[in-house]
Image 1 (cartoon, one colour):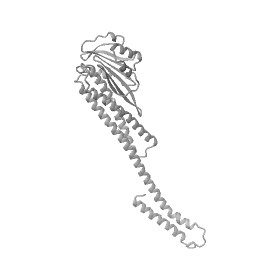
Image 2 (tube, one colour):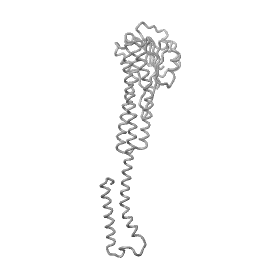
Image 3 (cartoon, helix red, strand yellow):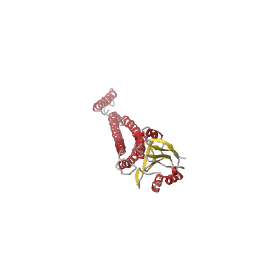
Image 4 (cartoon, helix red, strand yellow):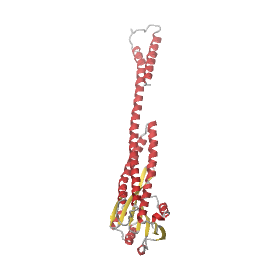
Length: 322
């Protein structure tokens, strides 16, 4: 079975466990609700849930879809919410899905492809019975808040990696592998940003939704999570801009370094051109050339070469080419 936890709550406190087999005979008193948590549900379990809680068939079918964007749908008095979980695995962001079915006296959370368990979340919510007694809407807020909390460490980890890449780009040439890594980070941030928009829409709608299972006193909590999603989305945009700046700075610095090397090569070529020209002239096989028979011709030629080369070296050093 993939049922992780299933309990009935009354006045914000856990009262008794339930199972899918006896959920059809479950009698809930006023003020009670049931919270069922399932991981990777199969068709048989979804069928039991649909039968016992009279779930809308479209909601059940959508809950079983492997890849959907965050969304919210209303079926009579039942709310169906899909949120995307995320975790950083190596250089990539791995995504999962949490489908949430909310009724007047039940909330069913179904995790798929997510490694973050709701055990700590359940314990945290149970530690505040004065808030948990609000019912399924507060549990829904807690689950969405828990999912959004998982986005922050991902952004911080990517931010640290980008800072290291930025420092390296200022110190040395970026290798092909490092440039490929930058483009990989940009792709992951684009995908991540694509999740933020629908998530913000879901939370914004929950903060204004008028249904029986959402209390007006809980709606400000959804607005708080909405603001956090907006901040994360803003951070993602900022990281994308920093990555673009790193590539531009790396390109400019590389051009500058290439220009410096080009100037140095040109300066040395000019210096070496002097002895090459003089040696080339005196290497010609002509019989009558000036100073061929002079005793000090060799010494004078070497002196001229050294003087001209030294003068050029001094000029290039003074102008910053060497």
